[in-house]
View 1 (cartoon, rainbow, N blue to C red):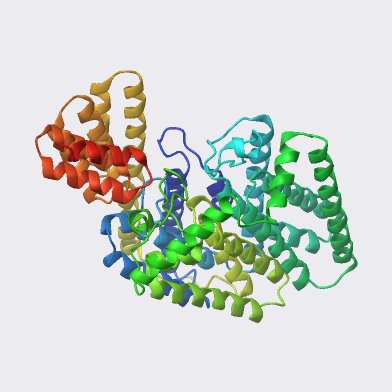
View 2 (view 1 turned 90 degrees about the horizontal axis):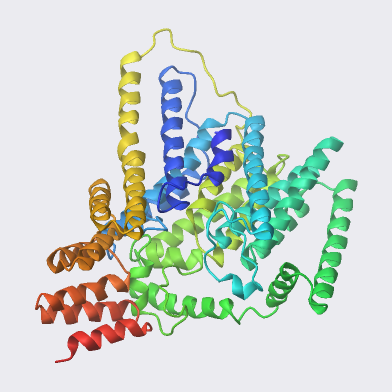
Length: 564
């Protein structure tokens, strides 16, 4: 469990096309299968017991609401597996719940719970070092996404091993209050120095994400930790020192900004000042997206449109080019995202979970780590309310929540072992372990093989070997037939070879699987036109306009295929 908490944020693969999201999700699945094997082994030998937490029922309700929404989704395939590059479908939501539950089961006492939290902090330290080195030295671990570096004075936003600056900000907003709590609770001078350095590194990395939501969330989380920690001279000294440091940082950044200063200082100061005017820039775009999302929620209020289907249904409610010609596939607020994808049932389950966390903290508030747990939860929650869930940040969060539940529950100090049965159960155990080993293939092996083949196909295409690219994409589709992106690329390759019938079949399949990329329907319209299917070509072109009517290329293709 400690190894998983440390490594999950660090997992990156360069052998797959999706180098961040998919590898972390596959690593989480492997960890889950391993933990299930260990848990069942100990349970069959009567060496452990099943522990319940007050969060079990709310989380089960949340997963159930996602399941109901998937059944009634705008596209069931998309809702179950999630969209490529996000993968926030029902399967991933169930993965989050499994991580929480298995973490809570694996932790027998407060000492082990604290060890898991320290493993999370150790991972956060490594991630912070990578982020700082990436932003300052320009050695990018993964290409930054979202706003371009030009908007930050040529400074690339730190993404570290997360591939997304806002996702990294959410992760650090959760970890920073835990680090502050470690500092406040440190009894030895060496522990204070170590925790102080950890807090400093995470703070710098968080600033370099330029994620304003993460800044606010982390600030609130740290304040919560301080407010709920027992009064001591160290606490008073830390608060005074933090206040002086904050004033000094603001003064230095303003000085640097006025004098020209380094680009990083200028960009950070400008981003800080933008908090005073949240209705401009990306903040204004968020407000427009939120307003349009309310109309989406009202159109199907009970069960929503299904997990991760936002990009498929939002265009019909979008009232302006809030992201230019880019596709808006998230509500940029986790609360609105849940309402849009899981409806009222999902919002009720989400609210129930939040209330359950607060009640659990209140009952266990006298535990030494209770303030850190509440602060970390608040930091992540506040950040997600102005952003959205992403796999790299969500996986460690749900592990943290499992450890936090183990810390706060009343029976945290009860032993985890019991008397071993006189007679073992080798046959049931062997059957279970074989079944779990077989599950490695569809849950990890096939997705990895498919995406690695897809990456090789794109590399072969760039090298001019179209024949090999076609064969590799065919293998990728065979390994993961539910992925619309692989089908769309097969259509692109067929179109490049003027095989219009094969292109049409591939694009049609991508559309059936839930693709909401307008280029798929533009290409389908062109293929239909070459096949003499005039009405079908016009219908496909109109669909591309429906998905993004603010992209002039979609309108141009519609005009072309609809003209005599």
